[in-house]
Length: 264
Length: 340
Image (tube, rainbow over all chains, first blue to last red; front, side, top):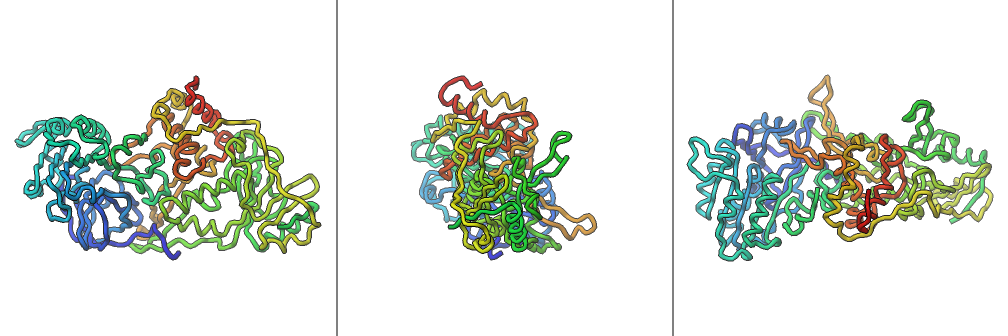
């Protein structure tokens, strides 16, 4: 075969950082161009393959933030620095950076949904994605489940960052409650002049978007990212199709006005 | 283009000569292997002689396995090394099939060779070696609704054949086969196509399916009746879904394979994600998902419907669910009629 899009390439692990007791961020060496919001098919030979979104990247490295909850992700947790991850990609349509550039960017992320939006925040910080203003609401189950906790202070140098946990907890003096309450309390000078990103578990996205719409933000300014089971990333295996859209090709990032019509 | 006539004996000799040059595949009867006691199974299989070609009964499995096997190794692993699985049979293949299935291959091509702009190399290497020998349908079989789906007529064939009681008429379109059939008596034969089926369906024609149809009570019946066995998916000539499965060999964990195996939207686990999320837990939702794909959303993407009306899903369903009837229910519901 001259070209085999299913053949992954080895990417050496250069760093492993534990985020929570079951979540961790792998940094691998790879020089590939990509857009925040895209994903890779990540695999280990003899174990399996799964789509994992990019949680960070640079000219010669990529980061994947993984929760060990399945056969592949459990095996990924056993890897050590210097070993190879096998990846192919990037796949999918990422966030519309041209639209976000120079915008008032608001990001609401729930749990593992913070991974795919982190490159947007990092872009705003390092100037590769210049924005007029940045607001972040990140929601987690508990203080033990925070992702990227050591970066929150750095994020705050660029904008307003609110980190909330679902219920009050001993040793936590920050905001509590679901992200929906905090969206409701947002004051927007001109809701039509905000680009709003909402990423998280399906139920969270549904109710968070409903709150964002109540703020008066137009459907066309709201962006969501879908997560689905996939076996190919190429529009062949059929797992991620919703209506006529293939999440791996037409998403995972969708404008809400398009996503609203997609019924699983 | 030229046509010829053969006696059955003469055709049998041509068939043998064809088998010297090509791998031959067609519907074949397996006595006693049917779903019910005392019944036979008809499926696509390699053919050694003309008398193995089953013409009296519809195959319960489609010829798609020739290009999309139920289980295909994509890579062999030796430690961390990926080696592409070679194609085991390098021969060109002649497949005897009916017009609906030729149209089915068009749909397989759309997904495997066109969707997303990527050509699937595992599909392509098999597809390139395939030559269609079209079996003319004199009458349609039970549950066929090809006419309603507009797939009763096919033009993309190398050779068309009419199998009579004591003769075989042949039209040769692809010149590469002209020599093989040159011994036949000249004929005026051109294939005809079935123009009506006992079963008709009304295919909904809407640009956007109204959201109410997704939640319509017509799907509820299938919650109880469908048992998620996936036979409709496996028998369908246009179902293309697969999953990737890695295995390692029991006696050497260094070595193993990556395989792709058929999957189906009716089967449990089709949407399960690590961590516990899944979609379409109810069987009725799966029926709705499949139905809309076959008669609505594939068309939005490619311009024609996916279902070719071969009726195999109705032939094989152990719960006697009729897909054809389901399409009619959708059409009725869209008209605001009673869709029960």
